[in-house]
Amino acid sequence: MKRFLTPQEKKVLRYEKDRRNTHAESRARSRNAIAKRKALTHRALRHAQDSATARAAAMLDEADPLIRKTARNTWRKIPDAALGDYVARTLQSRFLRGMNGTPPTSALLRKARRKLVPRPASFKGPLQDDPD
Image (tube, rainbow, N blue to C red; front, side):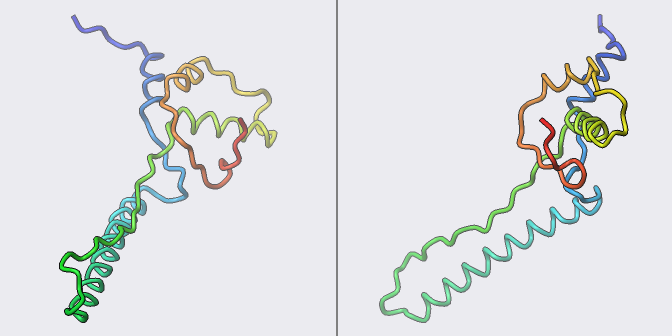
């Protein structure tokens, strides 16, 4: 028989699995930017290969039959921050600015942050200063 999750267990799962965009972009703009960056890197690779082919064709006498592979201009997606990290940093920054009276001590939040896979977090804006 299936066991239903308690609201506390659901909250911990949400803190672990949900993500928040901390790269100072809206969701729609970041989706468009991903496609644009991928297209730019592929375009740069094609341009480098075409220019290498043209140079090799110009020097047909001493040209190597194998054209050296050009390096790829790489770009990688960075995963968004986990909701647990985002909430903890938001609460910590609010505390440091004097907006909250006491430091945040949520047992569910601590439990979710312990379960998170450690990833390099990059926060932009007011959350970029690492309070840890």
